[in-house]
Amino acid sequence: MTKNKKVIIIGGGLAGMSAGCHLQNNGFDTEIFEMHACSGGLCTSWKRKDYMIDGCIHFMMGVSPTDSSYQFWSDLIDMKSIDFIYHDAHCVVEDINKNRISFYSNVNQLENELLSKAPEDKKQIKKLIRLIKKFSKLNLPVDKPYELMNMKDKLKVAYLMMPYLYTLLKYVKISNKEFAAKFKNPNLKRAFETAFIGETPSFYSIMTMVWRHKKEMGYPKGGAVHISSLIEKKYKAAGGNIHFNSKTAKILVENNVVKGIELENGEKHYANLIVSAADGRSTVYDMLGGKFKDPNIIERYEGDIFETIDKTLYVSVGINKDFSDQPHKLHFELNKPIRIDPMTELNVLETTHFCDDPSSAPKGKSLLSLMPESKDWKYWVNLRKTDIQKYKQEKERIANEIIEALDNCYGNVKENIEMIDVATPATYIRYTNNWTGGQISWKATHKTFGKPTLWQINGLSNFYMTGQWAGISGGLSNVVMMGNHLTQIICKNEGLKFNR
Image 1 (cartoon, one colour):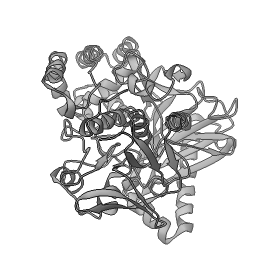
Image 2 (cartoon, one colour):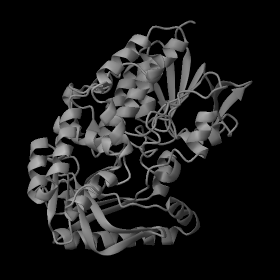
Image 3 (cartoon, helix red, strand yellow):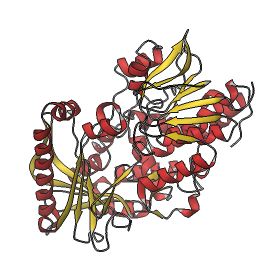
């Protein structure tokens, strides 16, 4: 082939821009078509009065050179220029009597805290600490996608995984709820299941504690919009071009070969290769008309193995009060439940303050964000379509009930409210087209562990996919890595040597 083949990328989120950067650096001419007015996709922030709401990042993984995924960030942005915040605790869980258990980031502090609160659970606590320390030594080689690994690469992975494989597979099958059931102390049992989502495999929670302990997980000052803008700058500097307010309606196919895209306004654009970094279901069932579905697609979207992540609202409150002396993330029980939608009633709220980031709020003030679960995402979509006034009233009602709960928890909140913002699943669908309006794609479960990435659809030529819907879960570092891996696959298929 000759260099400078043209590639169209659908979606200007982190996955699309990462792929764009690497493709540009490997001799391709790329254009990104993004439905929104700015880049970033789900990795975004928005301004409300004097407060900057981070609608995405609570933490980033791979922020330390000691982590193997660090290289994928450093390929795109100057990591040394970013000031990362490392929180003392993953979270704090408070019961109805104001008793708190802190899940400290440092493994030794964590051990002391849990033993002091639940000495009768010494055996299970020690097991947890041993697991964290064991997996602290694990650092997988992720330079290549699995699809391009030769026998030597696979043997290397097998050798590195040998000491961990049995334990890993065991705790992929044991959920956080099942792990917590081994605790005798009811407060610790409830706190663990609250801090780490009950149905999630405990292996993923153990790795979260590993990354916290090793400071390979942190929050970037400036938040999501800062990270997105840096990657956009890198992409444009590499010669890439982004078209905003350009939603793709159709992927053009002739004789099972993808030729281009058609936008909602009727414009058609052609390229040698098309990459969808957009919502997966829209890509397959709308843009491709549901005509191209191999067994992997059917398993994902029509089977019962893959489940979409639990949906939430995103409630942000600007308060004329300094919360920096409070836990960064606090789960607390409610005096009375809050009804979110016809399928969801909450007895616990999770609050996050951003006081460590001066860009989030004026000095002496605080931005608090909450993500109350909302199981009935269709309720919000339909309500906005059929009764916009009631839609607004329901958002206001929930915000007021949450503020009342915050006042009961922290005190002196209601009279200091300066800003309220409520985003629903309908909001996320409007701005990102993310199926079901969730912020992440698939639930991480033992059923999906080890499932292949959907880079391509069998029977469809010149077409690729990337991003969280193509993988087995979401996460910023994961989709950034996928942009690199996809480019390696494309280079191999086009007979080119891949350059970082």
